[in-house]
Length: 307
Image (cartoon, rainbow, N blue to C red; front, top):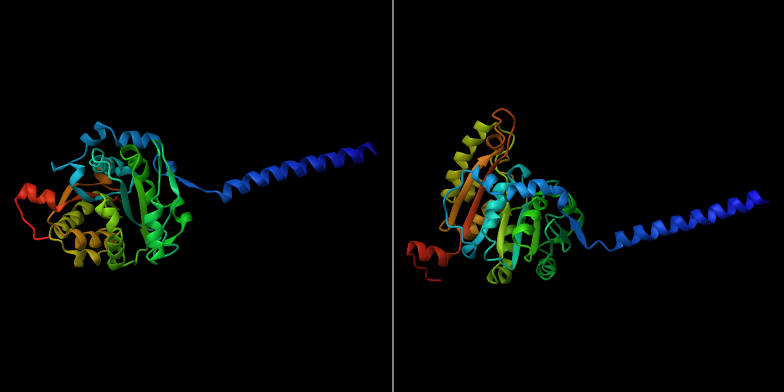
């Protein structure tokens, strides 16, 4: 009899413990209000990327760095190049744009052709808030589909977030990732649809890595070609390039068609072979680029526009 009572008591306690555990798990699962971006870039990597020592090792071109005049940036999403991304994003620190529009490749090519999330992102310095109104407007127009799960492992967005949090802690985030075969017109339509945000001061950040799978010296040769295509605004050629040149040709092509080259400045160009002093291993190359607003170009160059 005593044995039966003990068995019954054990079963009751086990049931209560299991119920509590399941309820807690259910609560966490049903109320996911943020994505943890910290695994994409360690705190050590973040602190190194924002240091003067890291920037001193980069071959930076002396261009205007006033964030008040920047409409768009191109930055890498490779953790090895976090210092390049940090230096470019730091140009926005003084102006503190109200929102940032991240355009990035969907590396896994899963989900819809253009995906976004309204979840916030947890970073080291602050919690970045997604612009639900802007994303909701794109979704209502059928331009994007919300798919939160894609952003839990997409490094083309994730690597940028701790850096954005460091320099732009109050800025809202609008993230859109695209399939490999997504064409530039789709991207251009989204840029156009975000005109209210751009008019209010939003800056586009295109997350793009360039040559892949090549040695250091081969990557340098490819980048010389790419620099020529960029400076000539040769969007048609860039649109046809493969991963040995660029991993998101449609995004780069859309930026060139939208902004032109009049205000485009290449800030830096290097590759992981140079940064890691390895001439043999396959590497990834990087460009950081800024597009200046027309009123800044007028001021510097004396150019006048009719619009």
